[in-house]
Length: 92
Image 1: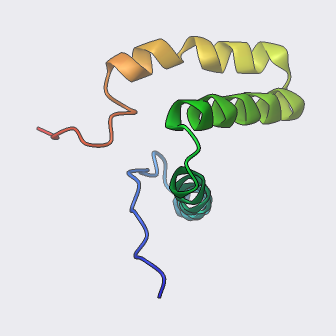
Image 2: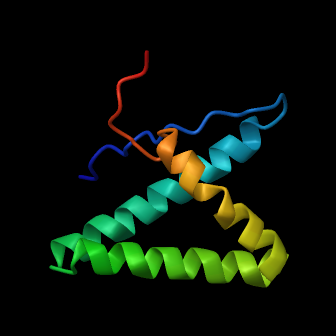
C-alpha cells in the first residue's frame, strides 16, 4: 500500500494557473518519493539537497540561459528570509 502524498503549499498566483499548480504539485510528489527512497537507503540528506539543487539549476540554465537563472537565483535569499521555503511555519 502506498503512503499518502504530502500536499506541498503551492498556490496559483494568477487566474488560469491551476493546471500549472497541478503539474508542480505532481512534480513535487515524484521528487518527494525519490527523496524518501534515497533517505531510506541511507543517502545523506545534505547530499540529496545539493544534488537536487545542482540538477534543478542545471536544468533551468539549459532551458532559460545563465542570465535569467542568475536573476532568479539572486531573488532566492529574500524569498528564503520571507519564509517561502519554510514548510512548517505557522501562517498568521
